[in-house]
Image 1 (cartoon, chains in turn yellow, blue, cyan, orange):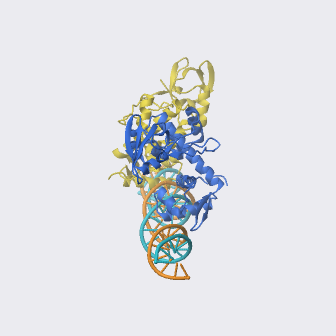
Image 2 (cartoon, rainbow over the protein chains, first blue to last red; image 1 turned 90 degrees about the horizontal axis):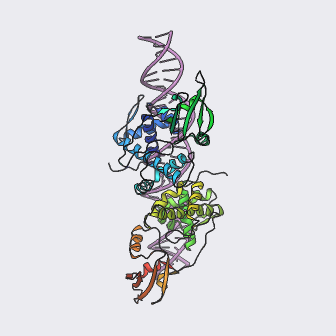
Image 3 (cartoon, each protein chain N blue to C red; image 1 turned 90 degrees about the vertical axis):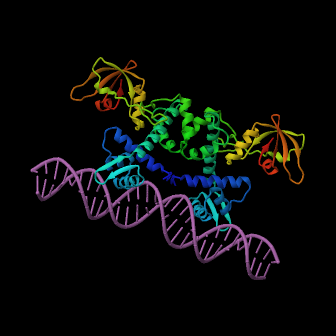
Length: 219
Length: 219
DNA sequence: GGTGAGGTTTAGACACGTCTCAAATTCTAG
DNA sequence: CTAGAATTTGAGACGTGTCTAAACCTCACC
């Protein structure tokens, strides 16, 4: 009962498991360990702990699934994280490639009070700087299905809506190309055999790999 | 060498030892333990660790003294803490009684980058909301010797410059009386035998204990 | 329906920061 | 100067989260 004080580690695991689940990936021990940057055995220990706390159901060798309580906490952490990202970007002018790492540290020490102030001051934003949705105060998160940039036909135009959030180098590169949420993009060419794609952004042509194009959400 | 990653606990101990030192109190094991809210033996362990890390000199049964390196880190933590207090009060409109606790958690996860942005955005403040000095970017802290409110003679006026920072209930009370930094106070009466003092603040008379008056800095 | 490769769990260890309890040391009052 | 009081330290334990090494399941393939 009550609150056995959920450590930062527990919160991080719950968050990653939740994200894996919502990406459609089955949250296997290995996948979780890779995301967390720990050994698989460490993940196993944690999964057992999460199960003991009633935050997840762990069927050994089978996988894990968050309980109602676990999902709730995961959403709270994600809300903290993404709100902080918006805050750091808007109010303190941090660049899009820096906000993720900062928010990762701040998310665990953000009080509900501060969260509310930030949310209010930002005007209740619905998406973070990378285009990921922010759960609202009731922890409801609006899902949206985006096309990915590689699906664009030559000549077609679109607005960038989402970019990956956790690779700072990649984000710096994308920011330089202005291939970030809000950017306007036109498909020029797609080389055959899954070759690179040439896109026009703000009057500049850039060639990017199809793999990268697949990671960029558009609408 | 390098950075053995100074844990939040280490930073907290260094900060408290530094504060004890600059208050003129000899940082004994017991005093440190009381400030940290831990058992004296826990403090001893930590003092030994600090000594092993070259952050302090520990003479058993005698006390402890911060080294150059230890003082530097203490000042960095104090800078983080007090800058955050100003930031939370000014930008996010947190009340003076809430900022200390929030800053205590945030101070350990504030990056240098963020610290610099905050400092700049605030216009390089020199004092936190309780009136304590903020070390500058070079970690120099301006000391000032304040009189305390109980030294005021009947009829004398002064401006409140400093209040205690870590008792939220007390701060709420002082804030209600407007007996906080910036407030203008006039001494009315001081009852004999160290009795209470009656002061005028913004047109309202309040009686406060001499003990409390001693904790309030004026100029 | 065996079997081997790969994913998963267990076992045992460690670092950290905390505790309690008991022993050692220092302080202080007579 | 000394004995009792107060303080400080040491030893051993615990909880958390991590690791490596080794044992253990599962499933797809033949």
